[in-house]
Length: 295
Image (cartoon, rainbow, N blue to C red):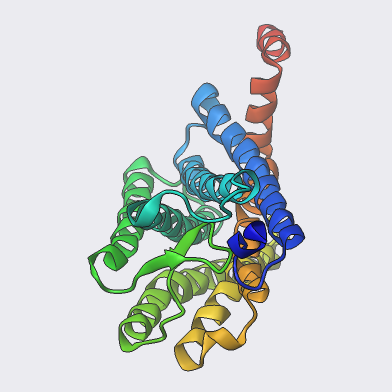
């Protein structure tokens, strides 16, 4: 009975373990793939280009999301006696800030890569360091700024329905939440989505005429919509209706989908890039790459 009372409302023991296991798998796969991308960038000089700096920035942001998921997974799976967030209110605020900041950096970082690809393919000019570095700094400073606003009273961080991780509190639905939600979503979801869709649309229009279209122009926009769209819909519903009518298990679905994005981004932006893939392979087989350089 005590164990049952300790479970979050709306969840059974098996459901809590299942969600914790999914979070753990997402966290480990995201950390592994993005960690490999970061390691290959640091160890392979050929990868240290302005364009790949945008990919590195995205890998760092996605590693942060995976780390956030790993903390939630450990709390969910291992703290069997509590099944609750064990680090107090201040720990919840820190966890919420870290997760929200890296999520925004991932969304805006994807848009930055889209613009970088448009610049490369449509202007036929290499992206310069004095453009890439300020762009990456802007992505991170902007994300940290918006994630810090709930700490200062505009918006609020609280526990997710599972009770073992923290995120932006959408359960209140008051004027404070609504004003923050719509402003934040405009600058950090709609504008990046517009940049992503527009950049690839212009690329498709220009390159399809020359027959040199080498990039999937529809996948990145779909990934952004499918990965972060469920969260956006949940927040929108919470702004106009009582979110308590949605079951706690269903409320956790957007979080599980979003935390799979680091793995998907790593596959799409890093492993599908011939240069990054070659750099990763060189890191995994240094002896073979050394022999190739000698030959």
